[in-house]
Length: 161
Image 1: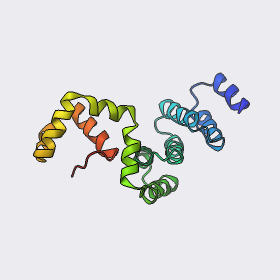
Image 2 (image 1 turned 60 degrees about the vertical axis):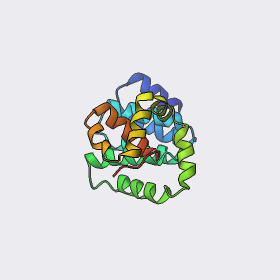
Image 3 (image 1 turned 90 degrees about the horizontal axis):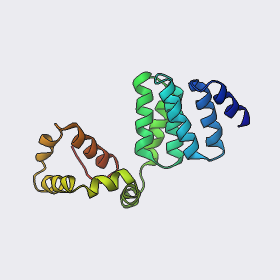
Protein backbone atom coordinates (compact mmCIF):
# COMPACT_ATOMS: atom_id res chain seq x y z
CA UNK A 1 0.00 0.00 0.00
CA UNK A 2 2.87 2.32 0.86
CA UNK A 3 4.24 2.00 -2.67
CA UNK A 4 0.89 2.79 -4.31
CA UNK A 5 0.48 5.84 -2.08
CA UNK A 6 3.92 7.06 -3.14
CA UNK A 7 3.21 6.32 -6.81
CA UNK A 8 -0.07 8.27 -6.66
CA UNK A 9 1.78 11.24 -5.14
CA UNK A 10 4.30 11.16 -7.99
CA UNK A 11 1.74 10.64 -10.77
CA UNK A 12 -1.67 11.87 -9.52
CA UNK A 13 -3.34 11.60 -12.94
CA UNK A 14 -2.54 7.93 -13.55
CA UNK A 15 -5.81 5.99 -13.61
CA UNK A 16 -4.05 2.62 -13.43
CA UNK A 17 -2.45 3.49 -10.09
CA UNK A 18 -5.81 4.40 -8.57
CA UNK A 19 -7.35 1.23 -9.99
CA UNK A 20 -4.60 -0.95 -8.55
CA UNK A 21 -4.72 0.78 -5.17
CA UNK A 22 -8.51 0.28 -5.17
CA UNK A 23 -7.89 -3.45 -5.64
CA UNK A 24 -5.61 -3.41 -2.58
CA UNK A 25 -8.17 -1.54 -0.51
CA UNK A 26 -10.82 -4.04 -1.59
CA UNK A 27 -8.70 -6.96 -0.40
CA UNK A 28 -8.25 -5.13 2.91
CA UNK A 29 -12.05 -4.67 3.03
CA UNK A 30 -11.67 -0.90 3.13
CA UNK A 31 -14.52 -0.48 0.70
CA UNK A 32 -15.10 3.26 1.00
CA UNK A 33 -11.44 3.98 0.24
CA UNK A 34 -11.58 1.52 -2.66
CA UNK A 35 -14.69 3.24 -3.99
CA UNK A 36 -13.04 6.66 -3.70
CA UNK A 37 -10.06 5.40 -5.70
CA UNK A 38 -12.34 3.85 -8.33
CA UNK A 39 -14.14 7.15 -8.76
CA UNK A 40 -10.83 9.03 -8.98
CA UNK A 41 -9.62 6.48 -11.54
CA UNK A 42 -12.72 7.08 -13.67
CA UNK A 43 -12.27 10.86 -13.45
CA UNK A 44 -8.65 10.48 -14.61
CA UNK A 45 -9.58 8.26 -17.57
CA UNK A 46 -13.31 7.83 -18.30
CA UNK A 47 -12.52 5.22 -20.99
CA UNK A 48 -10.47 2.97 -18.66
CA UNK A 49 -12.88 0.07 -18.29
CA UNK A 50 -11.12 -1.50 -15.31
CA UNK A 51 -12.12 1.49 -13.16
CA UNK A 52 -15.81 0.75 -13.75
CA UNK A 53 -15.35 -3.00 -13.24
CA UNK A 54 -13.52 -2.45 -9.95
CA UNK A 55 -16.17 0.06 -8.88
CA UNK A 56 -18.85 -2.55 -9.60
CA UNK A 57 -16.97 -5.14 -7.55
CA UNK A 58 -16.59 -2.77 -4.59
CA UNK A 59 -20.26 -1.79 -4.68
CA UNK A 60 -21.23 -5.47 -4.89
CA UNK A 61 -19.13 -6.17 -1.80
CA UNK A 62 -21.01 -3.33 -0.11
CA UNK A 63 -24.32 -4.94 -1.25
CA UNK A 64 -25.18 -1.80 -3.21
CA UNK A 65 -26.59 -3.84 -6.08
CA UNK A 66 -28.25 -1.04 -8.04
CA UNK A 67 -25.13 1.11 -7.99
CA UNK A 68 -22.98 -1.91 -8.86
CA UNK A 69 -25.23 -2.68 -11.84
CA UNK A 70 -24.84 0.89 -13.02
CA UNK A 71 -21.02 0.65 -12.81
CA UNK A 72 -21.02 -2.59 -14.81
CA UNK A 73 -23.41 -1.08 -17.35
CA UNK A 74 -21.06 1.90 -17.71
CA UNK A 75 -18.22 -0.55 -18.39
CA UNK A 76 -20.33 -2.35 -21.00
CA UNK A 77 -21.12 0.96 -22.69
CA UNK A 78 -17.38 1.21 -23.40
CA UNK A 79 -16.87 -2.46 -24.29
CA UNK A 80 -20.09 -4.48 -24.70
CA UNK A 81 -18.19 -7.78 -24.72
CA UNK A 82 -16.09 -7.25 -21.56
CA UNK A 83 -16.34 -10.57 -19.74
CA UNK A 84 -15.63 -9.17 -16.25
CA UNK A 85 -18.40 -6.58 -16.60
CA UNK A 86 -20.84 -9.14 -18.01
CA UNK A 87 -20.12 -11.58 -15.18
CA UNK A 88 -20.38 -8.80 -12.59
CA UNK A 89 -23.74 -7.75 -13.98
CA UNK A 90 -25.00 -11.36 -13.88
CA UNK A 91 -23.82 -11.65 -10.28
CA UNK A 92 -25.72 -8.48 -9.37
CA UNK A 93 -28.93 -9.84 -10.86
CA UNK A 94 -28.53 -13.16 -9.04
CA UNK A 95 -27.60 -11.55 -5.73
CA UNK A 96 -30.25 -8.85 -5.72
CA UNK A 97 -32.99 -11.26 -4.74
CA UNK A 98 -33.03 -10.11 -1.13
CA UNK A 99 -36.25 -9.37 0.71
CA UNK A 100 -37.77 -6.23 -0.87
CA UNK A 101 -38.56 -4.82 2.57
CA UNK A 102 -34.88 -5.06 3.60
CA UNK A 103 -33.84 -3.44 0.34
CA UNK A 104 -36.33 -0.64 0.96
CA UNK A 105 -35.05 -0.12 4.52
CA UNK A 106 -31.48 0.14 3.23
CA UNK A 107 -32.59 2.57 0.51
CA UNK A 108 -34.26 4.77 3.12
CA UNK A 109 -30.86 5.11 4.85
CA UNK A 110 -29.45 6.77 1.70
CA UNK A 111 -29.20 10.55 2.36
CA UNK A 112 -30.07 11.32 -1.27
CA UNK A 113 -33.27 9.24 -1.07
CA UNK A 114 -34.13 10.89 2.26
CA UNK A 115 -33.70 14.35 0.74
CA UNK A 116 -35.93 13.50 -2.21
CA UNK A 117 -38.65 12.12 0.06
CA UNK A 118 -38.51 15.21 2.32
CA UNK A 119 -38.95 17.59 -0.62
CA UNK A 120 -42.57 18.88 -0.43
CA UNK A 121 -42.79 19.22 -4.22
CA UNK A 122 -41.68 15.62 -4.74
CA UNK A 123 -44.10 14.39 -2.07
CA UNK A 124 -46.93 16.14 -3.90
CA UNK A 125 -45.78 14.69 -7.21
CA UNK A 126 -45.58 11.16 -5.76
CA UNK A 127 -49.08 11.55 -4.33
CA UNK A 128 -50.32 12.67 -7.75
CA UNK A 129 -48.60 9.70 -9.40
CA UNK A 130 -50.24 7.28 -6.97
CA UNK A 131 -53.66 8.61 -7.98
CA UNK A 132 -52.90 9.02 -11.69
CA UNK A 133 -50.04 6.78 -12.91
CA UNK A 134 -50.17 8.46 -16.31
CA UNK A 135 -48.99 11.71 -14.72
CA UNK A 136 -45.43 10.42 -14.64
CA UNK A 137 -44.98 10.99 -18.39
CA UNK A 138 -45.54 14.71 -17.99
CA UNK A 139 -43.07 14.99 -15.10
CA UNK A 140 -40.34 12.98 -16.82
CA UNK A 141 -39.90 15.87 -19.25
CA UNK A 142 -38.18 17.81 -16.45
CA UNK A 143 -34.60 16.42 -16.16
CA UNK A 144 -34.30 17.20 -12.43
CA UNK A 145 -37.55 15.44 -11.59
CA UNK A 146 -36.70 12.56 -13.93
CA UNK A 147 -33.36 12.06 -12.13
CA UNK A 148 -35.07 12.03 -8.73
CA UNK A 149 -37.75 9.60 -9.89
CA UNK A 150 -35.12 7.29 -11.38
CA UNK A 151 -33.18 7.41 -8.10
CA UNK A 152 -36.33 6.39 -6.20
CA UNK A 153 -37.01 3.66 -8.75
CA UNK A 154 -33.46 2.32 -8.53
CA UNK A 155 -33.72 2.34 -4.73
CA UNK A 156 -36.91 0.27 -4.90
CA UNK A 157 -39.08 3.01 -3.39
CA UNK A 158 -41.33 3.39 -6.44
CA UNK A 159 -42.09 1.31 -9.50
CA UNK A 160 -42.31 2.76 -12.98
CA UNK A 161 -43.01 1.05 -16.28
